[in-house]
Amino acid sequence: MRFEHPLRRQMVSEMHLRRWPELAAPMLLVQILRLVPGEAREAEAAALAGLPAGALDEADNPRHASGTLAGSVPFVWERHSEASAITLFLPMPPDPADLNSADLASADPASAAALAWAEALPGEVIRATRILIVPDEAGAEAVLPRLGMTDMDVVSCRVGPQGAARIWSDFRIGAGGLGCLLVAAGDVTGGDLSRLVQRLQELGNYRNLALLGLPVAQAHWDDLNRIEQALAALAADVALPQMTDDMLLEKVSQLSLDLMRVATAASYRMSATAAYARLAEERLADVAPQPVRGFPSLADFTQRRLLPAVRTCAAHVRRESELSLRAARFAALLRTRIETRIENQNARLLRSMEQSATMQLRLQQLVEGFSVVALSYYGISLVSYMLKGLEEIWPGLPVPVIDMALVPVVVGSMWLGIHHLKRRVLGGHG
Image (tube, rainbow, N blue to C red; front, side):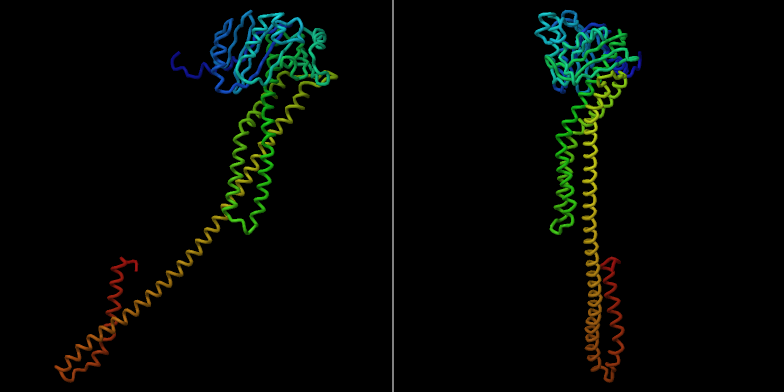
């Protein structure tokens, strides 16, 4: 097709990700969820491309792969934002209580080889679960005593449409580092069973990913305590006369840098926790747990374990934001005080300059007056000498009268001449 958007096929393939094959009881699933850093993605892709045996199905999205391993063991691999999940679909072992590669090798070599390959994939395991699916509750009651679950911690409830299926789990790490989920399928079969088990696993996966934020929030809680105490002490230091503005500004700048460091270290994890928690809530609503008398339900377990951790992370985010806001307000007030002091200093400097300029102007005017008097005196003296010489030629010449008449003329001429010269030198700004 002409003029196709380059992302069209990727968007369509996103709508078909996370497909599982149809499940049928009895069977066993093993799912391992790993945190895979960016530098390990190439090794993960190489491990998928170089299967020891079996074949990969054709895929139109690099974030999803499926196929079969040696011995016709189906698997599904999917990549999340920061984690990858590998799911193996195995036949039910003779003894579900003993699930590790050594025991499987004696009973089912193909399952043992598949499990060994899945365990060797790159990344750090954040959740690993074996899901045993049996046809009904009678079969589950027969298997349950052999699974080694802690009786006090067993969670059981009905799930799925009209509560047709039932689950059991203690959500603890058991044999071989695997948790255990027992599912009595009941009337849920085929694709409905696949979607139900998949949503149960996604609920657990998102729950564990959300809980990754709790240790981060706890680790930085003491840092926030220290910063809060320092802010309180800084507010008291403002009133101390020995604390200069420069010292206060240096302290608040250091606290702002500490807050920025805490936010940088924890912001991604806190945001991821909030997003994973919302996804876990959605999956919990999808499986629609219904309580069974005598057991805590999946909803009870999630609310008791997940919600406090999520609220702690949310409290950490709120507290960090409030401290950042307080530090910013303190810095703004301090800057305002510094600017006010600078403005006052500038105003005093301007007043001093104005007074100095006024005095200079008055002195200049006084000097101009003295200059007019002095020049006029010397000019009249010169004219008087000339008149005395003329008096010898023309006896009876009234020299004193002429001197008296010349005084206002000379003084006025001197004043006009000085001001004209002043205007020419100053260019009209005098």
